Image (cartoon, rainbow, N blue to C red; front, top):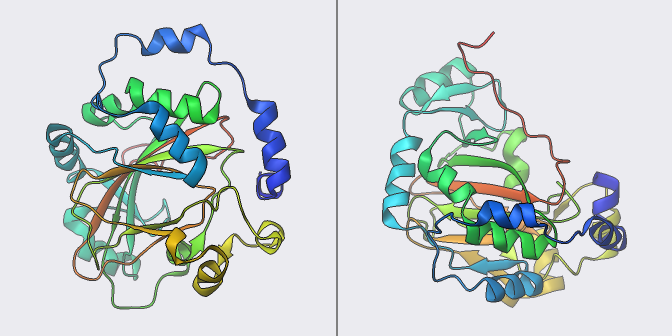
Length: 281
């Protein structure tokens, strides 16, 4: 996918070839499921996604948020994008000493996380309908991830450095992620940044480069400051994004950030891995 989806004309051809009418089976599956987003205007969300690659305002109800927060505390994570660095939050400092590195990020990932509130979001008919209309096919659920980002004073570990530079992802010809802040995220709290419209307009050098990164000043010069959206909000604030847009994480300074990420795509090209639990052989 790396060589094909990065070039916009080939990506457009791939999207065209992979588009299929949303079939009756998918529509029947969604019937009877209650949404937690009754006020979302699906048409407006999809139109904004097509235009900007980003829609803000997919916010979690407080009961769903609280259930996910409770679930997030005792589960096992892996650190710094390395599934071999497994630990529990209560053992973070001890584990940093054990692995001899500061933890910048901690991730818990599964095809379907065993949390009723998250499973309800994964199967929410409004979210799935948004994914279906934007992808123009039956959306394939890839995985859900809960991710912490921690304040650090030292230089970033190489495995996570790229998250904090402007970059774009190439998991499929087209895919979307529903993102929900699970903690308050304001200035200095590790907000997410998106370059609106960059899913449809990239410089040739960015399409043919051997990397997917871009320098901040180059982004500002080409797209303009008005297209760079820094996303802030209280816990429960959510958005949906086409990750072919240039985007970046920012390092929190004052407090740790927790986010939930759910991915839907046209195909299952991305390699979702599940770290072995300690009791598995």
